[in-house]
Length: 110
Image (tube, rainbow, N blue to C red; front, top):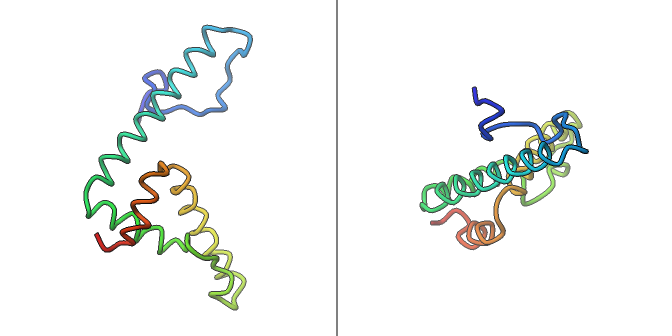
């Protein structure tokens, strides 16, 4: 498990003294490194056709390109599908715009 001090993990809502400039600066640097690390990891992942195809297939399976409510008359199934969709939408919120455009252009066809 990652240590909170190394910047690999850490909750944005961690308790820090907002009045202490050193503490807030350290936290902001750590979160900035995390964002940069996530972007580099995603860039490496989608730099291959296989990675882009996997991401597109995942987002399709997660119902990201349509709502899941019309897909089921069963409200429990619809709620489950919306939960899947929520995870896919969370992933899309992490994808830089230029890579999202690339994924949609290729539409899983590589």
